[in-house]
Image (cartoon, rainbow, N blue to C red):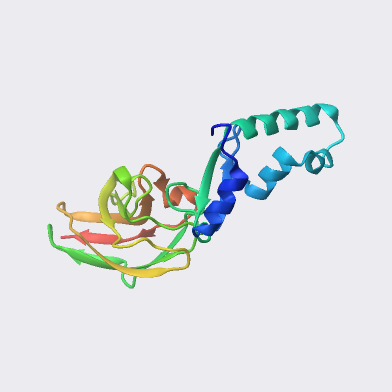
Length: 212
């Protein structure tokens, strides 16, 4: 940010055109968000942070940080309440139910799964994004009769809209198997390039499919 740009002025202008909040990224810790009011306290109200510590060394560190943040910043303007989304693993959690988990079919016969899926986490599931980063899809693993993993990415099925926290949707997914025997597809969700929901604590639904 150039020296002639004042975030306090930007905040006032942004409120006039409908933005509701402004937050910043810490220069030395870009994974942390800094609320606007705390930014003001650090950069323009030395009494605010001097009350937090009486140690001279810490005061010098914070003073240096404040100087740096007055000279250069990365900030974000927000319209409405901020909701995390599936471009990060934080807040990703689901609950999946299906009325039927046991199937008997012929090879290459299509099976239809009716899935009731609820977003029980705190993050919005994106259904589209640039290069599919963070896009949430229904994903199936395939296990053999001994529950050994045969194929990690057996099937993908997308959503038609973003799914908000607390929202429940019903999806129908079709699958078919070519080889006779007992098969165990595991139904989970995946945030593309982020990870499978099972990795973050959700429980997949495991089906039993007997191909005659």
